[in-house]
Image (cartoon, rainbow over all chains, first blue to last red; front, side):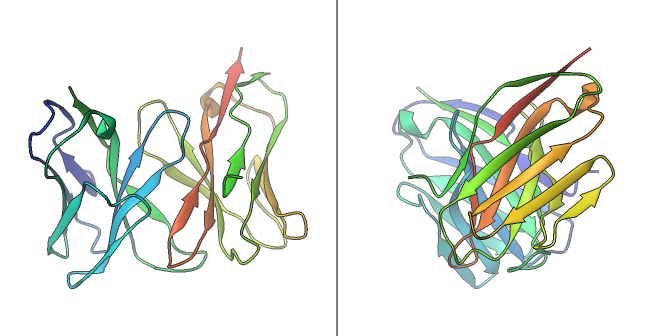
Length: 115
Length: 109
């Protein structure tokens, strides 16, 4: 079984709809992240959480919200989806916040299309 | 200027050849450096961390040049399975990682 899972894997939705992307991990890591990837751009951080009570905005948090329901679960919501949120979304975990051991482990990604 | 810059490629290289690519970063205070590999439409996976003195992992060698603010990745005896996009990652502020857009490598038989 995969250590980091994401659901759904693919989603097509319409402008204005509310969408939730879910991420679960069995690695026992405290730190979780949501990124988006667009063609020609590096991964960009949307939100990150260092534990259940610690949630922080990343570089591009506008239009997104998150919920850390438990150590193992971190959900990303688009309250009112717009076409420029069409992207590949990745959830990641890490067991060390700073320094060379901060290996990030990624889920398989969710491909979201907003029409 | 982007915080982390990479040549997007693609680098087309014959199997068995040696290939190298660089990545430049803008934040002189960055402390951690990594190379990740990403296969088409898949998730990134850590290839190797980059240490100040340089480090090697099999056919892969990573180097850090703090004075010129770049890191490099050298792949020797390239294999078809090395075909992928290589992502340069540098630590930024607030415990965040800054990701390059990647360099695409195609190994040809």
